[in-house]
Figure 1 (tube, helix red, strand yellow):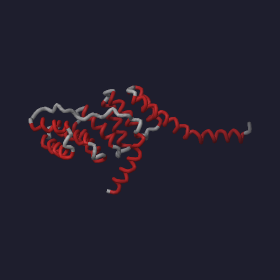
Figure 2 (tube, one colour; figure 1 turned 90 degrees about the vertical axis):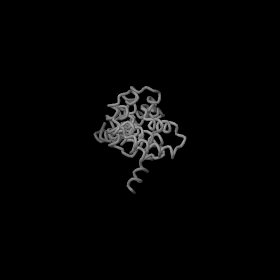
Figure 3 (cartoon, one colour; figure 1 turned 90 degrees about the horizontal axis):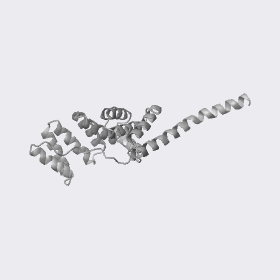
Figure 4 (cartoon, helix red, strand yellow; figure 1 turned 180 degrees about the vertical axis):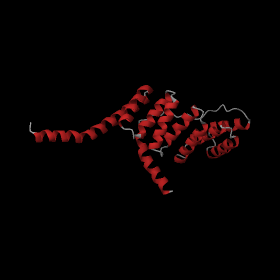
Length: 208
């Protein structure tokens, strides 16, 4: 084999590596999401751990790794992964929502309130985000702030049962039986749509 032919083969091999690597990451992401949806959280966590080792700037993998750890009740690990995901991508409400719930599980209600405030700014029509903000205020003994937040929620969503019940418990000076609205164990197979929403949010924020 001539030297020219060897160099040509080597050059073609090097050029094909990024495409092959990108294909592998995509397949691993799909496998991780399927594994998560099936409830195999240890396996999904391991897959997303491998992905972030290869692509440390892929915020979605950090988020999904945090979500896997959340379901495994590794709240400290989930908190750290959420922080990385938010540093990479601060315009996705789902990441703030997960971070807020993790902070609630760790009884860090002040941090949770900040997270839900950020999430509600991005997704203001999600009533669960507003409810969890009110819950965090109550757990910090800010009863008047929690009541004002609940008044807003009930005015906007009159049939929101949990908000009405929590408001009654606060007025009765009772410890709330109502718990925060937890992160839904929804399918993660559609999370690829986050990229479009992210671009819209970035444009909105820049234009303000």
